[in-house]
Image (cartoon, rainbow, N blue to C red):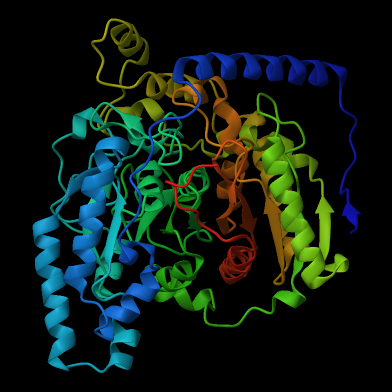
Length: 534
């Protein structure tokens, strides 16, 4: 198994000492949180309804073949949400009555014989299947708050384009899921809906900002769903909740109907709406629909010859500043993936990388998120209408008078401290991004994937991300590069929490990510039922 070190650099003593001190602090805070929360949270209700264990693709097939009916399937998922939501707080709005009417209409359409089974599979591939999405993607008539108190009563007047396309394909929106405040933090907690808890351990986070979406699916409360991702907001929740999630290539899926809206064309390219599901087989047909007219660029129906792929892997970011070391469980999971691929496709097809630019992932992400609009995160906290006074809101927070979260306010301060658009530091870090992008484009070509940790640790305790805020850099770097990436679950680790990796490919080579995800699901079993404890 060869190794490619594209550049070499010595590790300064100062960085080594800094990493050691940071590691000690991480261990200290972990001990404190463990003492606060205990070893394990509340146990999940068991999944007893076999309908809940089917993929969306399988349910769609059974519905159009009249082995099941849409009302029956929807009622199963509604019951499950009502069963788990008091424990998890993942669903924040619902349209059960309207959805049941739409499900009945879908059943009548199938019974009418107006379409053959094959015609339904072609024209309405998800007819009658219940779907969820996060509270920042517009669904007509439903809340559209993005976790922001100022928007607590806002409801969407029309569907986001991606939701409209899924509806056209027959899917039935029935519930809306929780997010972080303005979708810019990696724990889903806000002053509108509160905190969402992990189905594998209710003391742990679900990630963000699509955390409620990842959670409801891991708990078998939804057949499939839509997320959005500008720094890992699909992939981190997918990872923490043990499901699959795909961030598409840049500008493939429309961001229309997502709040907050990007400030610039470049930010719009970093943001991506994408599919989330417990089952890898659902991602490809979902993406085919969501991409609309741009689906042809992805050639999703073209078979992928896995035996001809080149599998690159990198085990860590190489020691990013204030970034946690990769957990031992995750290191072992990566090794198992590498061993599987080497055994099945040959050592020559698997190559270890160490790209030194990735160590600066966080700095590169922050710089590339700057734009010339003059607005920052404090403007997003002001509902894109005004800039909040962050320092005043922090003072109010300490006396319980602010309607913003502490992490939202500190994120605004962190954002304001970053380099300015057009500054020498900004230009340097943009050049670093371009250099890394060019390197990976050349390496991956049209038949290579990079397997990389989705996150350096398993799901932390609630609020623990405050003490390791830069860990999102493992996913964020992919957004500013614009590549597609799929979060793939790899079973549960020693703490009973999901493990996983992300699979990254070149522009518009999403089908490679999805094919590898399906292979790894076959090898490692994919999603695991959360009520089963180790």
